[in-house]
Image 1 (cartoon, rainbow, N blue to C red):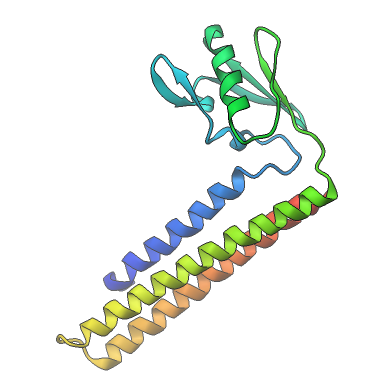
Image 2 (tube, rainbow, N blue to C red):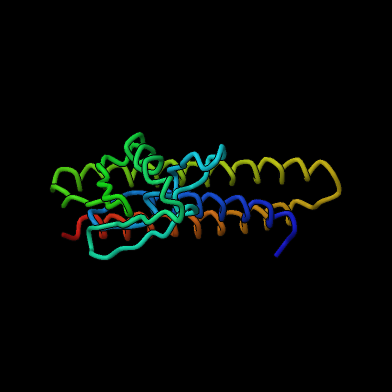
Amino acid sequence: MNEKLKEYEDRMKKTADHLASEFNTIRAGRANPHVLDNIKVDYYGTMTPVGQVGNISIPEARLLQIQPWDKTLLKEVEKAIQASDLGINPTNDGSVIRLVFPELTEERRKDLVKDIKKKGEADKVAIRNIRRDGNDAFKKLGKSDVSEDEIEELQDELQKLTDKYIKLIDDMIDEKSKDILTV
């Protein structure tokens, strides 16, 4: 692949990866340890992700269990979860914290799908902005010693990359929407 295109493909890939990680944090009525990815707990003065202070397990489809390695962290983890926008109240039995994920209502599922589509659309706009940046950069090359045919070829390749990543994002949106709408 042309070196000039590599930078733009890397940026598009990062955009798609970002969307995938955002989709992982959306709760779909089933227990998913990734919903805890953005929750940090004060671990001896350092803000540490919950996943790094204990074991996270899924004993049942809608139950997430957190067992901190240090029992003194139970209250801290519980507070961090309550302060988050997760919308689930943790139960603490003195050795583990349990998160019971409620069944999603039809209305809530539709809201989540709208949110997914909005996030996907924002990332598709970001992909198109990367394409625009690339096309602008290629046009500036025309003022130097690069032929118009080469510039046109670069722009065609950039458009193919754009189409590839837009389709990837559409597929991710469809897959996550289907996942959420499945009862």
